[in-house]
Structure formats: C-alpha cells, structure tokens
Length: 423
Image 1 (cartoon, helix red, strand yellow):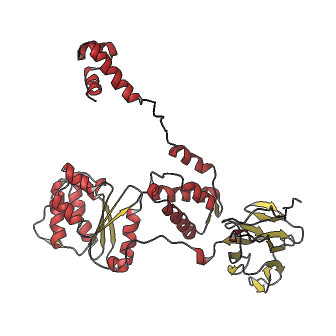
Image 2 (cartoon, one colour):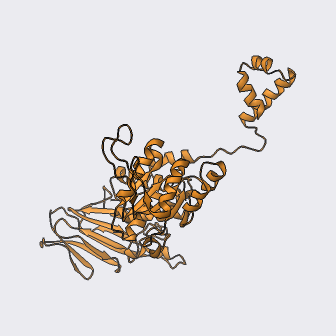
C-alpha cells in the first residue's frame, strides 16, 4: 500500500486544499443528502443498518450499509509547524480503516490528501468537498435597483462576448416589469426586413406580407426590448426609431394608424458610436438620444483580469463544480478574444468532457495558449509588407517612374504596383 509522507514536506494546503470550515456534502446510497461543515479535526465514517439516511453523533457519521465490502474511513487534520501562511496550518488526511479501498475522483486509493472539488465514492456513498457558502462569489452588478426599476433607457457598449445580452436580461429580471423580455439583433436581418421586425406590418404591405405582424415593440409592451447592435441600422430607420423614442408611438409598415408601446428600451453596440457619427453612418441627433439615458461600457477580459476570477467562481457556483485556483491564474494570462462568452463556453465544455466535478488544466486548454501566442519582432526586423513597398519603389526609380515597365519586371499588375508605391 502506497503511503503519503506526513513530515513537514507533505503537500501544502494552498488555495485548493481542504481546510477547517470547508463544506462536506454527503450523498448516501439511501436517504437525503446532508451538508456539514468541517469544524472538527477528526471525522469517522462508519456503516450502520439504519437505511433512513445519514446519522451524525459528535465525530462519527453513520451511513446505511449496502455491501460488506464498503470502506470505513477516517478524516483527520494533520497539523504542521507554525507558519505565517494561514493556508499551511495543516492538511486533512482521508484513509481507510478496514483495508478496503475507496475511489478518489474515480481512482482506487487507500489514503489521500483531499482537495476542494474532490469526489470520494465508497460503498455507493459519495462525499464531495467544496468551498463553504461564505466564500461563494457572485458576479458584480453595475446598476442600482432604482435604475433597473425605472423606465430610463440604457446604452451598453462593449466588444462581442462581453456579456451585453446577459446583462440586459438581468436588468429586465430586476425591473419587475409585467411584460416580456424581447431580444432583437438588428444586424441579423436584411435592411428591408429590420423595419418590419421592429414596428410590424399589415397584410399586403410588401411582397410576402401574407398577414399582419405585431413587431418587437408590440411584443415587448410593458416589458423590455433589447435592441442589439443598434450601430447597424440605416439612417432612415434611425429617424423612425427616434420618433418612437420621443413619444412612444410608431406606425407599422404599410399601416395608417399609430400604435403605442410602453416597452423599456436597452441598446447595445459593439462599435464606438462617436466614430460612427464622425464617419457619417449615424445621425448626430440619434446618437445624442441613445446617450441620453444610462451608459455603460463593458471592458474586454484582457483589460479586466479580475473579471476572469469572478466569472470562473460564478460558473463554479452555478454548476456546482470546483474550478482550481491554478486554472484561474492560468486563464488570467490569456487574452480571451471572445471575452466572457468564450470563457464560459470553454468552462462548460471542460465540465462536460471531464465527467467530474473538479475542473483543472487539461488537454482541452492547450489550444488556448496557441491562440494567445504573440509574435514579437526585434527592432531591426522589417515587416514583409514594408520590404515589398521598399523594393517596388526601388525598381520604379530605376525605370524613371514607369509603371508599365516596372510592373512587367516585377510580374505584377499595374494596379497592384500603384497600391504598393502609393503606400
């Protein structure tokens, strides 16, 4: 039987190690699941004939017997020498008392130093060690309740994947509005259909309009309308939407009457709106109307490393899994071009593929570092595009500026040459 050394050099607790006041979740073969806090230096798990569930008496925990080959276990805190590091006060040692092995994350062992997120299985019973309730982390919410409960419009800016849609949905949930939450991605429709999707249309308004359509404003009445990628709509539609934002009234496509909607509007944009105004893609009055409410910019993860920590811990709590601190620290070194959507999606993939409740660095993460590798050029290295430009200009000078002769020698088109020397 392989034994762990109990000398001073045994593994330090660190942030993943099991410690006093951590939570133990016991799932017996029969009966209800039970949660207890590790507030004792020793616990013993024994089999009993009572199949009604988990019974606890001081330092002994009795579980219904299912098989004569069920291990009986002891969980003991092994103290260490005094240290200034609160994580190094000791480690819990779990070992069998009757010579029958148990399973640690699917592997048969006789003893181990369990960590947070580990799952122990013995005799159809399961023990799971996890972070106590007091250490649970939830995502920061950027708005006060009075903002959520008001009718004021909200403008959310940020790169793709920063969580704009999720934030808009949370605002609606906290608003307690009686209507629906309607998400309309304006860039997913052709320019001819956006107006119909937003305002609705009447039968016969255009080819293919075989019946009346209410539109998103009608669906979101007394609720919340989330207009995603507001930066993609045309100037004509900006004018029509501006009229609704001013008085709450709109006209369906092809209709003659005016309708009203009490929808609360949340906008989102992945592009800088000031740049769109300067380039002429957005009307200035429409820009000021979008900005007249509450404004928020969601930072990308590369600018907010602490957000990576909170997202990982939020995922761990919501999925009831353990995400190792070493994994979180490794993730903080990456850029995450897909931001929160990429991070949460990657964690979900790891959870499914791992088949367990403990998420650590594995082969699924190797591609992340490859994608995030940056190429650093020494100061004396000239980029290839600059070499092409310099060489084209050199040959052009040799032929006294003749585009035709130079393009023939370089075996490129005259237009390609002009684009090079123009740079």
